[in-house]
Image (cartoon, rainbow, N blue to C red; front, top):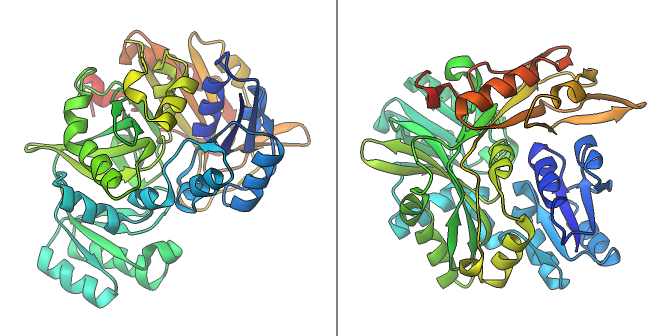
Length: 425
């Protein structure tokens, strides 16, 4: 098979890394890819993920058998719809279903319609409407930009003033552009977060092992929200083998509803959950693999990924055996100082080869490029150092040992990824 992976981050490097292991694959292209995907043997092509027509033309010209979108943007822009019209298989939901991530207000309405447990919410379209709702709801509450904001459009406001400031930033200052024109105000839920992803074929779902992301920039869950500073799997909040029970409450009702509306959900559906005293409640949906959850999850996947994807596309997921190792995996993100705000690019990266000498460690490239032959930083999140171990404690030890071999001036990382699973904070 000839496969085209879309994206340039750590998730896409991990997808190429896993797909390359399949004997069914003859050639992999990555658009635009990064030095990590290239090192895995993929052929990087300089086409942006939102250049839908150019991607379709390339896929036709190169006789691509399967397109695998990594990020959410091409999915919300209709890459699956366009590839299907061209007769090319695409592992991801159509644009109708991708609204689950593209519009938080749409996702919230569908959850309420299908009885999926979630936080109470109010959708507002103007600052004045928002301020009145904030006064009515009280604090703490959660302020969310309705559209795509690269995982950064969520503010947990502890006071009314913080909530008003967040709304002003989104709707008046347009901090997230058009994504913040509509805002969702949600009740604040007490509990701990966990990520649950499912393979979906439009009818059947198969949960992946649970994972836990770390959204805050700094240790102790402090600092601004990011796209994710590290993740591990499994998360004790949903033990291996218990995922289907949770998925039947939080994912299956939505998949069933979309199928009834004539749009079977095909691909990966990710539910960000808050485990509350009253059970799991959905915080948000993502319509693709998470980043950085993808890296440890694919490290735990023992089965060939290609047949899983083709079974999803064929509607026969229930006939596909899928196996994950009982070992644990943990990934730590190395980021550039200033992230998730403004940051400098071009810092030299050294020590990856040494880091990968640590047993069972893989370093996934997130924001890197080659400049005159030298590997340098090219994004807010630079690398995800991921380890597979017998336990969370072992994988944590290996990941941080490997991270110690890497040097990139002006970078930082959290020192507590996985601590919650070990009884810490």
